[in-house]
Length: 444
Image (cartoon, rainbow, N blue to C red; front, side, top):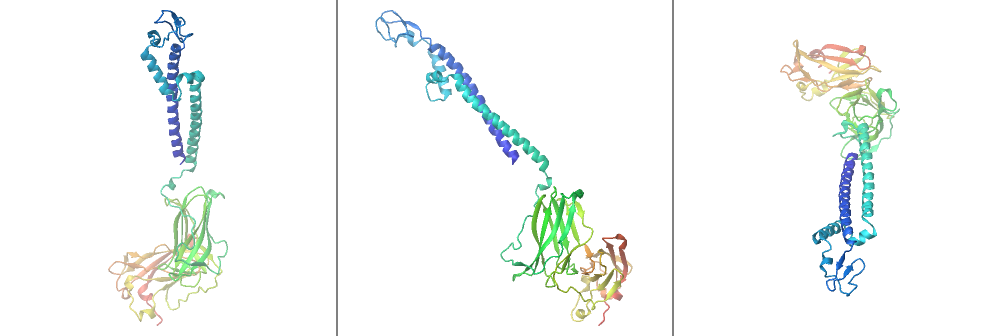
């Protein structure tokens, strides 16, 4: 905007300067013409009377002093100037003066220099003022451009303040329990500068009371005190000490303007319990607006509330297929369900993973299925995190290879790798687990 304003003022200055030059030229021409006319008109000639032959000084007498005859039609008087030059000079001056009065009175009363000085003086002042304004705005625009320019602003949408009930059909109401502690899931300082930090804080939880949907909205305050526009990403699959990677989860990936504080809301639906006892964020990251990583929080951020709901889970109907000091892994085979309905295990197998530690979280990966000594290309386990004191239900882990059919009756193995986020020395692998022997075992 500053640049456009400066451009407009520059155009106006240019037009004024052109007009000033044109008027100055006109004034010079008018002055020269006036001087020529003045020299001729104010030196009246002495003529000879056509009636009596007497000499008549036209500067003194308006008729012949001897015989009283008028000399208005006397040829000497009529042709005292060159008629063509007189009329041309007069018309040039009169047409360019634009005063609306006859030239004699104008120049007798004011004079050509005073008229020129009045016009050119005003235009010069105007030119100087407008030029100064133009230069000031132009310099200011350059300074602002240098210190405020950020290429990330181009074509980037930034998240702003939001309402909890954005639409008429929504009816989210504040729950009767509160967030414990400061609710902060992210607090990062650029170059350890306390004036250059970014925070993300869970402030409140709202429950849906409408008849259309059921779920929750989480209110976050995002503060970007830094000089940078950034992208902030955070996600949570674990609510009430339970993670279902085929179920609902919270995910946010948005841009935030530098030096801004905004309130935003994230939605979660289909929560099993009637409240939120805790929520764990397995990822909290700050990136540039073109998605280059600036900061990744290494540990899991868990926020608790004052809710009193029970978050215990009974897995006694499932069989443990692996156990150590860190985790228990259960098959998700439900013999009660399988005895009543047909289950297509070729779509993949799920696993319960119980993290028995108090302070260690793990990125869970797999080396894939193994059948008859050959590796099967395996899908279904992506960005999965086991959080301390929680129960994790994996997504379905499967293979498209032909061998992975009727797997309940085939030799099949799987291996899990647990990479500790807090301390790599605590990482471990299960080795290959015999699923044919362990997964479909039941107590029924």
